[in-house]
Image 1 (cartoon, rainbow, N blue to C red):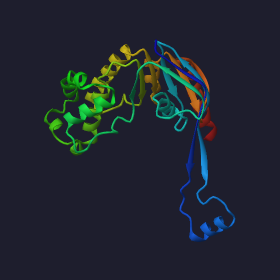
Image 2: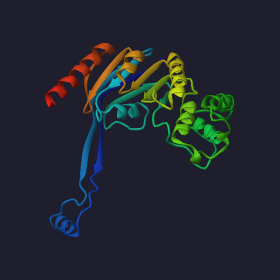
Image 3: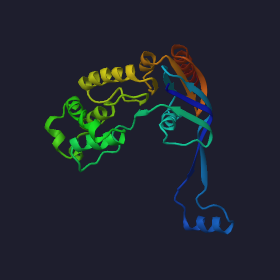
Image 4: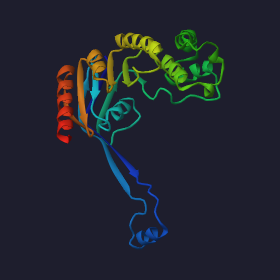
Length: 252
């Protein structure tokens, strides 16, 4: 049984402002024993309670800076909690920041293997998938070249093909349905449908509300790191859209 639980979960970043200061300002602050580079707290997520059960497809919506992508990274184990508790049962596969982690001097073939290992593949398991991954990219002889020679579109094709060559239990998706050119998007959409049919739990972030409506049966609306509403996707999307429209009308 795959499952995700967040219990009174909070995440706070402590960051230094790193603003350039004049020598005079430095001396004054030292004289009064003030911090030369004070720490600022950013409350990324605040007191989130959420359970995603086996078989559910959850969409996360909200404006920029609401904490959507941060929550996905929490679920992926990238950020530990500063308060509350996180429980994840099941193997997690993540589809975000697709273009990160390539070895620029290595060939496309070599990067398929490297990225596969990072996703939990073994030399034996990746060997059985490597040709199918290569065929999906449609990069042909370019796979023999170092990836530093690739265009951004070619890199996305390679990254997406590798990242989706898995059988996930818990699938985390962040804005990857718009990858590549039009013809590749059609293939990518079908690949995503195939993955989503196999995954036992899906958590998806997208600004494309139609994609959230199409793929998710439940949604959570975040604003400034707090949960505004959780419920059926149609209900939450309508509430979010109405709130956004009201804010625009008020500002006009």
